[in-house]
Image 1 (cartoon, rainbow, N blue to C red):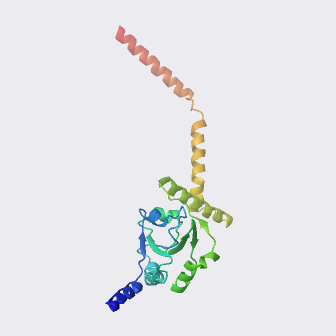
Image 2 (spheres, rainbow, N blue to C red; image 1 turned 90 degrees about the vertical axis):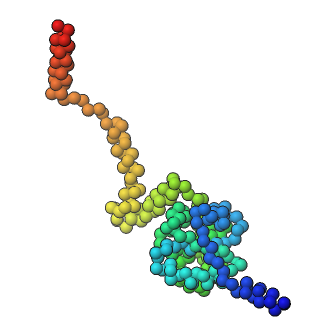
Image 3 (cartoon, rainbow, N blue to C red; image 1 turned 60 degrees about the vertical axis):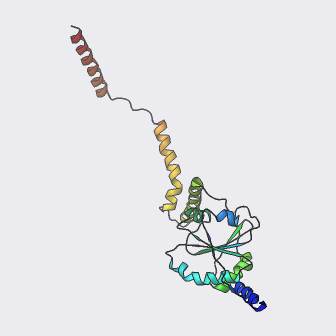
Length: 216
């Protein structure tokens, strides 16, 4: 009996750790990312199902989850199905791995090996710059994030002499709209030309003659 119990605990101890699946519905509830509450640290992989590098990383990431079992939550997010999460964390490529810790986020930039990822999660993140985790985004918030990203990219484009890029156009688009709106508001109403005035007078006289004929 004791041997049986021991084998059960041995099996549970060596069972594969689960990579948690996060989405728009459970992300904030489980991670409590924006508040920094004590749900523990989260190592999150942001991926796309069609991404070849993401597929290659899968077995490595499962080993990372096993190594960090009981220490750090290991999870993944399909950004193609949860676009607002990708926008919130400014995901620009796949796979992207980030550590969420006490309201801060750290982006992994090393080799995607088991040892390097485990070291990053256990403390190596301290050598990386931290950013504040932004609150969940709504429709307007998502637009704001997109515009902010475009603004950053536009600044770099202008510094490098690239004037005609999509990001520069997006940043200038509100200004262009305001200029056009101002022109429409303050543009004086067009006055009829002398020829048009004469035509209007003639039309009025013809209308008057028709009315006189009806009275007769």
